[in-house]
Image (cartoon, rainbow, N blue to C red; front, side):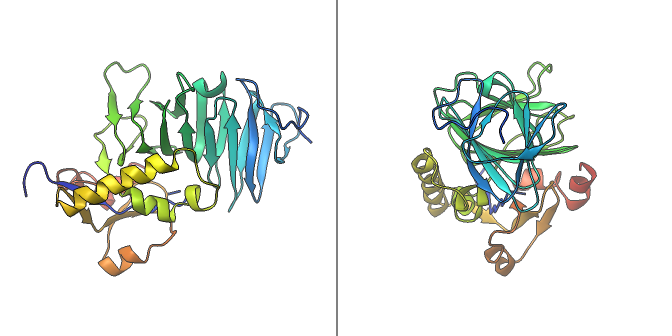
Length: 278
């Protein structure tokens, strides 16, 4: 195996993976977002106000927390065309429009347009600059996953100078938000497109062609043997690593899984160490 050889991880992330303002069909202001998709139960919560069920075209402001229930998903769209999709059991809010996106817990897919100057997503003690890219981020106390599908994102820990990493398309960072940012690992974009409910349960993204192109680029690298599939899979939320047979890998379907690692890093992501970080 040459030093240039990288391992590609099969990944199947299945999202792990009356308004206080009048309903309006027009574009939101820069500091508002509009509810554009609802799957099952999506709740809107405001301080000192009773929570209520979201409806299509509701306008969401900075005082509102959006929560999804079991088996539920939602989508918000900002005036700069940034799209935020929420997985089940997710809590999300924002401040100063897309400059202060905040994943309180759960998982979200963000397509941040180039118009979204300064777009940033926070998850616990980590943050990522996401303007002009499409990413997936999952966060629970003690663990996060950050995946780039197209474009380039920078993951960092605010207040820790130099603690950051540039994440390219088809790469993911897995870690503890209270620890130093680790190096990115490779994941299978084409598998993600086919199986993730962020993609299959919603209309096509504006960035779909770019995501598909990045997946095709990976396939060309695989044909040249510079990128190789592994049978390492993370089932469910968190970072617990499983070694599965090819039959199991082919059959994961839309189960909640997450991607894996190079041999050099595999020694640091055994099931024992991974579960200890959750």
